[in-house]
Image 1 (cartoon, helix red, strand yellow):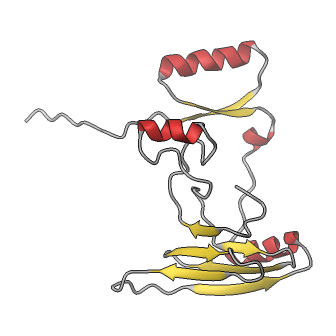
Image 2 (cartoon, helix red, strand yellow; image 1 turned 45 degrees about the vertical axis):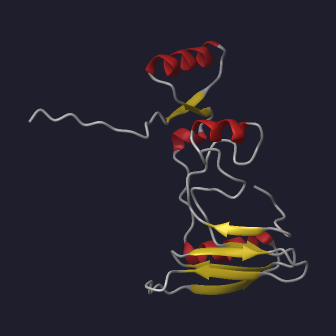
Length: 170
């Protein structure tokens, strides 16, 4: 979303990313079809509660609970973790230091795990094209791309419906 989040409150919440994520008029148009489907600047499929300062210090949080980093003050930051009264979740807060962003991210991923290497078929070149709209539209777009020399590594098909009907013959 942004490199510098100073001045923002940053919610740490995994949710549907949305279409547009605050980029107008795309987000507003998506929200017209389904309220909230446009997303926001902070919506993500992978919320990682970890921030790094320009002085190579970082704070991380490990919890399934909703959290928010408040970076609105110029020289301080605060962290809020929310739970309902009946929840009995614990959480871990940690501080990491380093001499570079790369070192801090390396230390963080050493603690929580590193992403596996991408599969070979993906690193051999070609676009991953996200499409939806049914078989006919997807086939047409695929043929158009191939006819115009676009190398394709994969198709990301995300046709879905918010309603599902099951008919039982009872």
